[in-house]
Length: 510
Image (cartoon, rainbow, N blue to C red):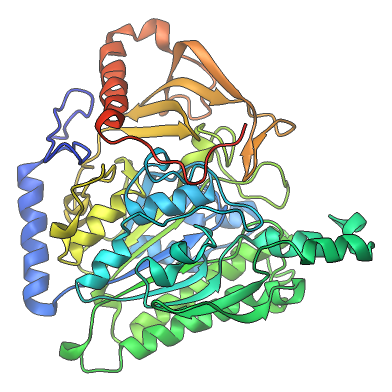
């Protein structure tokens, strides 16, 4: 019988770890499967594919695809081969999400509350990333594509756990918006202003770096170059996959590939062969077609090199759709978009595949945060003992949830933060909200994709996400019996910041 997340008690392994559900039988089955795999094949390779601003509903397996003018057969096929997470959560914006995925920590703990823009300082320095811990455990670590967790040297990929990096350090529009006369005619047609932007202190190239070394410029990211980046980055990842398969199977090192696409962040300039390829005949939808093709190529290479059955794949997006650039924006059936703590801002696609280990053709609404990858991937990689003690880890180990065919989520709460303002928590079907943003795209909270203005409620709002996914009807007056559960969860969460205070290397901006 399924447990009830409202009433089930959690276990706290130590005060610096988020409490979690423990299901003894589920854990036993998953541990036995993992032990059997290790006895036969060692440790799995890991691929994390992270799209940019792609919405929950863009893929066919989530109800989009053909229905929204961009078929995604390769992504849909991957979902059928694995598990589809319908309640997978990111943070509201890209840099906070990426840093939380890397560290297993909420933005209020690692301090990257918003994206750094045009070379602004601050980043991952001082944090412990799971790639660095996997590397210490013998994994080869490769980062490809978008980074956007700090351009300062200490925060660059080659200095926070990766053996090699090939991509850019910032975000798509920073490289091109000021070059496009449609968006910035006042810069493009002004020699003085063009020179002024060119002299701003941010790197305008995509780069290459190896562990501990300096970045080397590969090519300046002009608009024509931008259109080729996802294809070039895919080729680099394919070459990495091939190289890792060259030794005999029993002599191969386990590896981790973090492949981050440029698409579908605005502004979209698809590779020439994908222009007009979508039924929608729109650059955003053409880009979705291109991203689907890349997923197909990566999976096919794993199969061709005999590594598919030894590779755990996680595919997701860094946040919900971008509201302010419609129609060059993603699709979500939920309320609002990127930069908000409404479901449309943080509920993202999540697909997990590992042939023979993760159940195929399964969909589950168990709660999953991208932060959970920190604990889960360290356990899969045999490095769970390296989780640091000196800082709070908000991720939970979801190994048994993913490896047991009928596994239930080990996570009770999802916490929503709007930069440095606590916004909401979810447990089961319920979402208790004490602050939010307006979802008017004419409002702008601050830099980095945070749309709306902050609004705090004198009385909390309560939404049943099964009955009301658009979060339009507060149910509080009829559900007062739940108040203690919600306020208790909120209190315990906020109290964790007492012993483990927040950091703010990239602070919120008012």
